[in-house]
Image 1 (cartoon, rainbow, N blue to C red):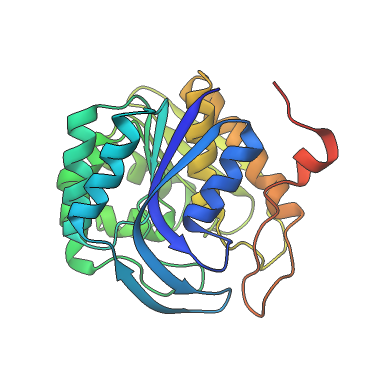
Image 2 (image 1 turned 135 degrees about the vertical axis):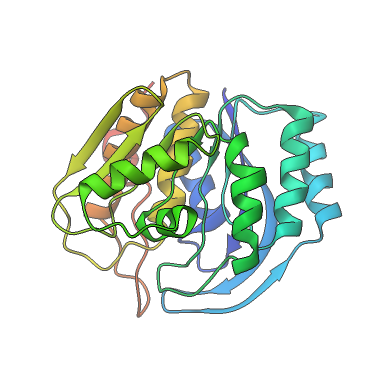
Length: 266
């Protein structure tokens, strides 16, 4: 069985973060592991508190995984501070895992900040060059590039600019745009669009975490980047289409809808 490690924050409401990542790995039929970098008290409506795990403990968790089990892919999610980023970057450089997917999480679905503003420079300098795939949404891509993104052409320009920062592939997600939900992939050679009709629901808590985890799981299963992104797009679309009206805010998506209906594919 392929093994995938998530390095991210914990969402006690179960819809995003480590919890969403592990659900996604299970739906993909890979063995999921986790390194918790922050404990987040949140629900579908708001974030009430964040407590970061010490850099030493972050490193020790990563050591525990790689000295014994290893990983066919690593997904990196919420890293709230430069200290968290430095700890994770050091271990990625030490163990050099294949297939590193980084989701530069900056905000919760309800708009609450999950990354210190001063951490953006560390993200650009230390984390982006370690990514095989980087998956910013439009607000995150705007913060990283310093440009305003108002059109598909702007998304393409942002993807090119982020690629120049050192990632091997970038996927600028179009969930915050208007019209069809179109994601833009750039690998330094080709621009690819992955589009679906936008689903009219507010229950989208955890979509970014889930999408990046699905890409990591696909890469662990030896898919090409383009195939992994295409399959992840299909998976997240189904999960959103059958999202759950749980809580008073942005409810979670349904990670297991297709699995429950059709069983695990090979």
